[in-house]
Image 1 (cartoon, rainbow over the protein chains, first blue to last red):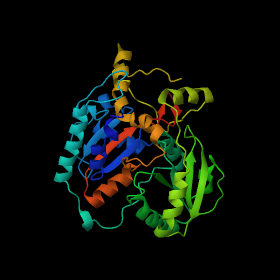
Image 2: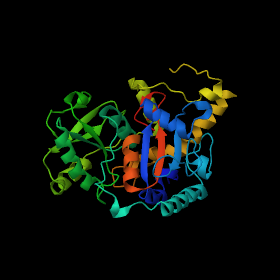
Image 3: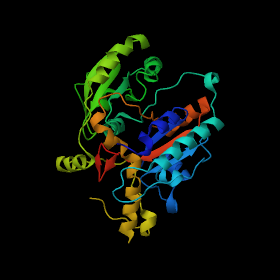
Image 4: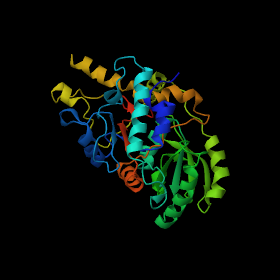
Length: 269
Length: 70
């Protein structure tokens, strides 16, 4: 049974009352600075950060740290892969209480909910491989067409049928697909199976760029259903990746642990 | 000693991100998951638009430079 914080049903339920942002650490210098503003021991950004914030993104509502353990308690230590019930329950309850204090604008919110985009296709392949989910690329050279596509896809992506079932990224140039097999430079909703190690991908299906939300539902459900998630365990994945020479190049330097080692860092293999 | 501190730090986040590994065998079926905005700019704009609070998480999608895993 999975008893991690972010897989808990009450936490997931409460998360629908939040805007959930998950960044890839060390992939964007500006975002690194944002993260350091919330948690950075000795001024150095660590691998992981967790906190809850006010809607303006300025005020922490719980203790920030490397994980929810910092805010809600729980077990931190080697070999721990499940939390006691109490801290998970506390996280869900805390989120519900915060949601009551910040209920949001409801229908008064202007505009339509945007797609929860990832930053770019290269990173999106990696993230969706890690999440073992399919990726949908909104691809068109035309910004105007992408906006229309995004509006239609958004109606589908946030529906009960599809919410949380895929991840999304925009693309405006065919060159962004250089690591994607079977891509033909045609505008459309490009559904991709990420490679096991997130360095490559393969097109599952391309849905017409002019498809309305109603016309998207069937083809998208069918395409997403063809996604085959990796079945490797964490250790198997790491070992297979090492054997295959799969390596990720960060956009910015890794500063994890610098403050705990007097500013010195072991060279990474 | 420094290494032991590091290990505690590393493993203390393991339960936080272990959901991906644990869910793998059943990932083909529809499972409830958190919906993540993948950029600070996009997520913050949505929080300001809706007035909803923010859950902020950051992590590296790699282990020992092997990508495709949290």
